[in-house]
Length: 400
Image (cartoon, rainbow, N blue to C red; front, side, top):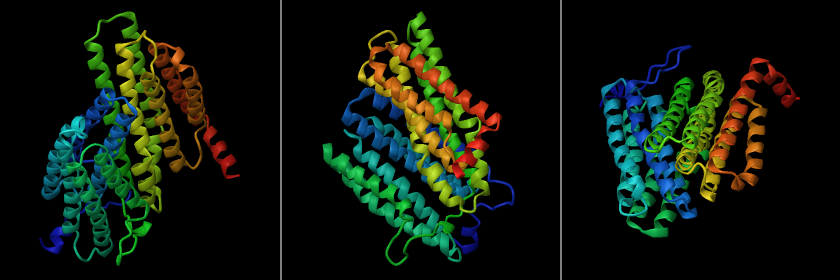
């Protein structure tokens, strides 16, 4: 491939206009609707300490392979055939990855590892080959990323051959390598570490991609709720539980999208260091947001199937932990883009923590109603405070 042809695969930046999310990227994202569903069902089926650790590792790997692809398509143009073919191949890998999730720590561990490593390494090799030699900084970054991913791939494959706790340990090490690498700016011998200025990113596109994943998670939550409700007898308890779960999903959407998503897109588009903001706010801080939505989906299914029973530990952890993770991720994300902590979110976190003390004495339905009420309170409080101009005074107080 000639240098000018390779350079042509990169997106063309247009002043005052962010690159739109393409249809090929949206099609790629559909695979992860399935992946998120697999993760929530896997957690529901093995809600034990070990099962929770294993499912968390699987979630972190799914998020990481998706967000790395979003970085690549932020640089490369998916409207071009070679990049589209790359995305289609990654979709195939994503389907193998997703179908392996329920038995990733059993009979399909090697399939999961091969699919994951192939997606991570193969995509980065494509980036390196697509980068012309005259783009020195971009080429050096591709080399750095590839070295780190090759190192982690060895542990993924080794874990696929291993069994039991050895598989968990090897995969945890592989994942730790990948999560640490951006924080140390992909330092490798000879090349050193990249600088923040090297990470040229189109902020609006990155913000829109991550907002799309939030939609995926919320959509999966609603699908799980609807599918579970459809198979149940429609009693007063199940109908109320269904409505509560649906409204809680709407409240989560409101908390993230009403002001936060737009503010994040504007902030990263104006930032002098969009790469740093993209790494912190979108690569790392969106993880607890998505995890909270997935855990809430697990809670919704538990409440729907046993609305009037005693709230066991599994129900309490998911019903409280889901909204709690979501609010923790959201308050940190908004702090990164606004520079101050959202009071409504902080109060919501405290109230959820207090509710946890009494949760075991409540029925699953009552627990669902209370957590939904808390999320509605947070959403309404933020909307009113932002409309009244309260954030300005908070920001000034923080800076003072």
